[in-house]
Length: 308
Length: 246
Image 1 (spheres, rainbow over the protein chains, first blue to last red):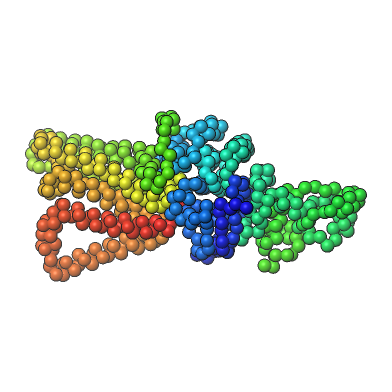
Image 2: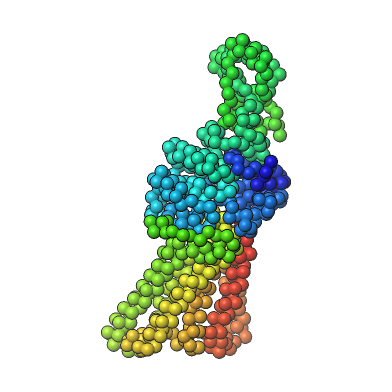
């Protein structure tokens, strides 16, 4: 293990809210992370503190082994693309890229030019007159072309259409293959990025609730579809995290894996096994810890954690 | 495409070169620090000239002095505010430290202020040589400011430009860090202190002394006092900026 970021007991308190609650985690080198969680879960706060754009209330952050605060040596190796980035008044995308070129030592102008073409970004229009999607494209281009050793994308796709998002995913993967680096991608479109991310870091209400490889996360749960009564019998004792039914057919997601014998038994009973979508798993696990989720799911979810 | 295509860009390594690049960052958009101040200065000059010309045509031969040369100074108040509210968050996206951003921005304002001072001195010299463009009208050559010579006049103009920039930056830091209410309270507080001082002077019937102090201190002396106030505000802004979330 080779962590580029080490976070220990990080707490950030705003006036009346606890944005980060004694959080500890590591970020490994040259890995793409999905940094996932609901709005207000603490993602942006965490990324702001890691890039020294905000200060912690308590706790420790080490990036490349050093405190990033006012540390040019460390900061110059990072790039943080914010969803709501502000740009100087009257600045155009061209100004923004010319600036980025000044400060990111590994900036690739060729890549930037290609991306400008692909996103069809008008270079001479002032940034405040760009559409939401074009504004996002400016950030995405800076994030990709800067090739920083650690790049943070905070919901970078806002307003980008499906084609543009695909360009972003493809370009990120292609460039990552040639120039491995650490990427933290915060996103609400979990299934869209699930093939991209190697590890998931899920934050909920200021606490890390998942920190594992995407494959491990997927294998944590299994989905069974078939006759409701048959499933109920087969899954006795399992921790069910989601249940949907239509007439006599039910689709049930439960935590844990099946061994070969159990698998065979289920198939013999006429039940079908389906993979769990990462999005579904994370939604369910986040809902378990949230007291006010929708009533339909509430009646079915095991009560573990709800009373917290 | 010139800005993007232009070839070799220095690869930043040390922090001082990054700070120098902040100056370049501020000048990447030539509008803020070059063209608008030039336009304001040029515009104020043209308007002042037209007024002198009309007055001259109407037979007013007295010495004519306008306040137009202070117009660009007010613009620097706005530049200071924008440098804080808009460019600071962007500087953070460029992975700059607050120190690099702050020193670089002050330096950029300094470069602009220097340019303004040079233009101001050149205009003043021209006015002195031509007796106010032959119209006895003065834009830059204000006798009181020029008392200690062209260099001192240039210094005064430079310091005033920085003074306005720093006031703008300082008030924007207070606003961003503590909100509108606190900013208004601070400004009100300063106003009250000034009124209190005025009341004190009036009670002591010391106004003549105060005026003679201003006259004795002279333009250059007051400039040096402005340097002190600017330095205090600049230091205050920096301390606030150091802990401000982007």
